[in-house]
Image 1 (cartoon, one colour):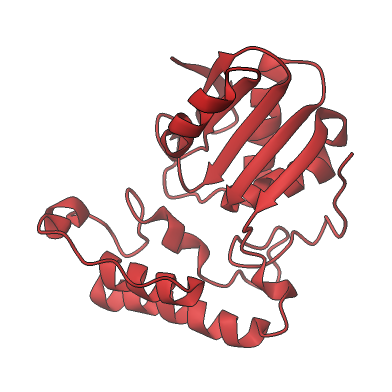
Image 2 (image 1 turned 135 degrees about the vertical axis):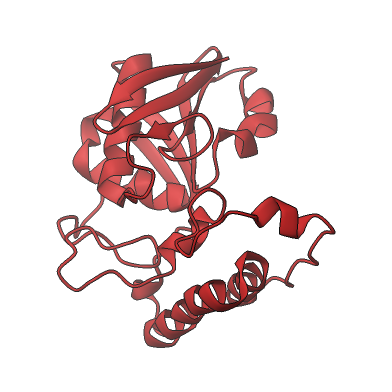
Length: 217
């Protein structure tokens, strides 16, 4: 069962199951639902914490058009951890959740015992960063011009996967999406380059400039 807590500009939903050393599972923009089957297996000997990042699942935002940056997501995660325990925890973060986990370790090292960052999209650290930046910008352009599922196909091609075959109800499921992709295409929001003066960058490959190093213990 999900619980909630208040944060600046958002209401955060989280769930706790099992008992034992605390393990936090976090994705982004995937909500907690994507981890539920795994959490049930791990909860036999761990206290597993699931969290819907703000703007996903049951976590709401006062302004749904204000996109959270990695620092905001990390501070949200810190609040959730503090609601569960005052001891350092293990954190497994996948995709954008991996970036949030790394920023958590940098901003709140006292709360973190171990971070496992699974496929964080830190493309700016790769030797072909310039090419990837251009291709990711193309995903955003495809989304604006052709819609969600062509853009998803372009994104998956960059990631090395075959594009998904659109289902018969795709048009119904994407009806009402604006050009910004809010309410269903949140993952596309992080394929656009951040402005040069953006202090925290974005989830398409920039490490926040105020966090040049990360910590794990």
